[in-house]
Image 1 (cartoon, rainbow, N blue to C red):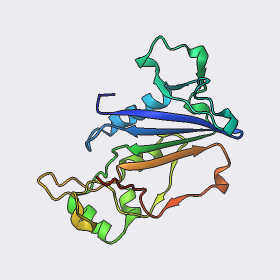
Image 2: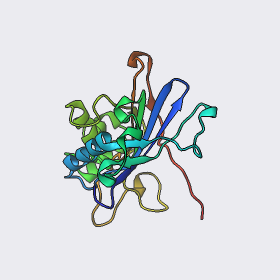
Image 3: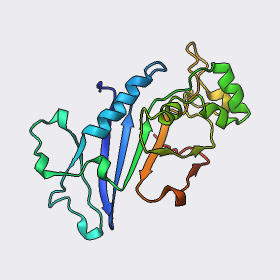
Image 4: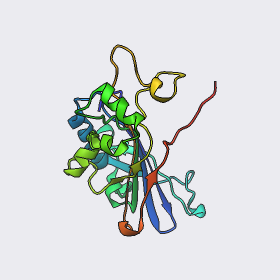
Length: 204
């Protein structure tokens, strides 16, 4: 990955289950969907975790934490001391600015469908949705049904449709911010939907 993209992971044990959270920032721009898929594959295959030291050991609380390390970044890392990789976790959650865009739609068309809250139609144009369906990326992972407007790209101090990028570039609205998950439990008993984006506010 370039210096502008990357990922950080946290692995913990909760009772008898292992959970991994991975926060990512993938490559930007509409046309580099293949690069984003490669970013995911690199993170999923190369991320490993160090065992907690005695200082960080919080096993008494039923949870163990770990820091992310990439094999390519530290060839001297002792794999014998590594905990299982992401693929072996009972539950995996990927989240962050994954940068997937809406394809085959204009700026004005996207705004029109957002104003009509036709999110199902928009989702069919979502690059990530399309590539998951054909098995190119985030294999065996799911995304909750989104019932809120695309989160990209807003101008500061603007809300609603008027807040979307109206500058020279007129970036097409998209759900760049994503949460995907895989759970080893039966999916038939596990449903999820998002009625609003997860947001935070920092006051300066």
